[in-house]
Length: 217
Image 1 (cartoon, rainbow, N blue to C red):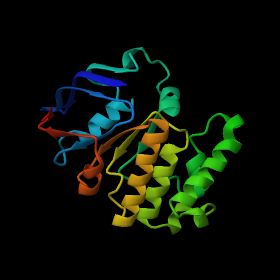
Image 2: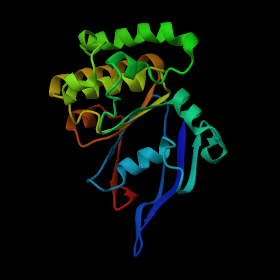
Image 3: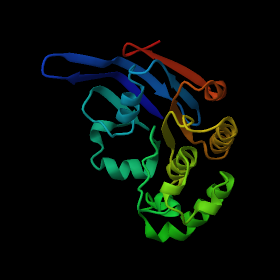
């Protein structure tokens, strides 16, 4: 599905060069739950941003279903149709209601009714239906993170990229998240790439890659 070949990322400051990723190569298969592990600062978030086309300033090649990233012209449209994001901080828009935040990625208005139904279904699944018209400011960090998780799923992406998605979740809600991931992998062949230290998530992984000093171990 996604193939990385020799991905290198260097941050330049006035006096130094910091090589965060050093010729990283691996493949992500359809329907797997691949976990990126490693110490803070090892390059996990940087790698997620590159795979998600949020950062295109890197060396090496990435292909998505055999199409090179370098050939993708409309990155925002490509992301919207194919990739879901769960950021380390939930990144909800404070002026929008919970439901408005979730439905924000729905650009095709002809699908709005269908996606609203799916949104309600997900809100019920994550025990958040009572907050559909609330602003994020009244929710806990864990509830906001669950809203961000639902938003990442609203367009049925082929792959979900998640940066510590269980960081603000208790054990029970982490299990709900993992059940949902197993369901999506089984029924829709959705792929998940998760950067995490959470042992509960690691237990569900089909494969784990460890990043150390910019290299895959």
